[in-house]
Length: 89
Image 1 (spheres, rainbow, N blue to C red):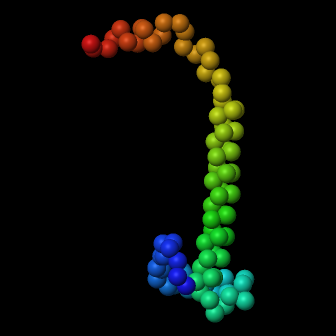
Image 2: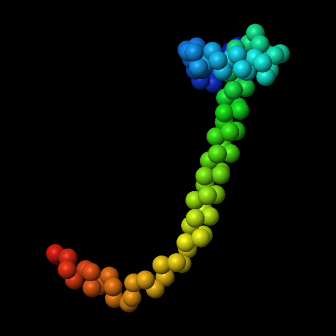
Image 3: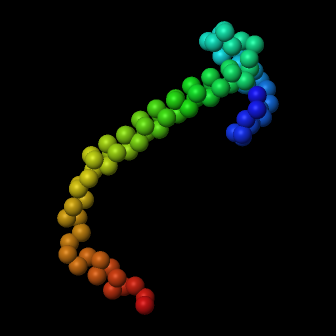
C-alpha cells in the first residue's frame, strides 16, 4: 500500500513469532495478515506502557507530596553563608 509515512522492517525472531501466534489467537480475523497483527501488538504495547508511565509518575508525585515541607527549618538563617565561608575564592 503506498504511503508517505516511514516504514519499519522487523525480523521474525522467536519472540516475535510467539507474539504473532498469540496475536493470531486474539485477532483470528487477521491471522493471515502479520503486519496487521504487529499493528495490534504495537497498539496494545503502547497503551500498556502509557498506563505504567502514568502509575510511576503518580507514585513519584505522591512521594513528593508526602515529604513536601518536611525539611523546612532544618537549616537556620545564614547557613549557606557559613558554609560558603570555607570555600576557596
